[in-house]
Image (cartoon, rainbow, N blue to C red; front, side, top):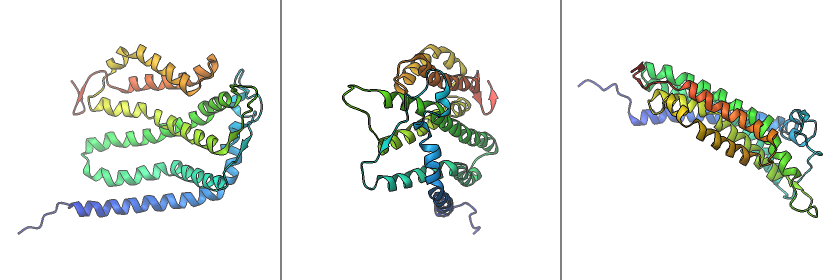
Length: 257
């Protein structure tokens, strides 16, 4: 009886185990390097938006009234923040390696035309994530910090920003913007699957503008037009890029119908 050449479930599981171990090893190396350089990066990068000489604050109407001072109110916070910041940095730096290893596991099971479509999506997704993180760091987070640090419900209650709240807002903003910038990649994939078409973007453009304006107002609730437009512009640009990437007509097996 001829032996089957099909790969069993346990063979796939063993290959996946090897991929996950290599991912953990790569993240471990990057985590160690990130932990070593984090004290310097923390002062010059993570805390840079606290200072009035941050690049964005040189624009008219975008400056802080004074440097934002941070206080630590928990004994172990600085150690755990050191670990957390190092982990996030290792994860961001290791994203291409993670995607490459996962792609090596998934790609043998795809058809050639599927591999041709998935490879650009992975590369584009990685680049767009970095672009979103950059937008969050240079635009969205500094504006959010400026508003929240200067806002006072009562002049009798001075603001004292804790290190924990600063770091939580910092990383959450960068992560959300990184994910938001994946919209064009997701739209492109859904367009190739026939779920989306370009006409839908034209049909709902006015609704999208209102939704993006509301989202921009929530992200930076300062109310001034400069802050609103700085956040609105990249989000709306993502919408238009997504509309451009989606086919005008439904695609069937790579051929326009």
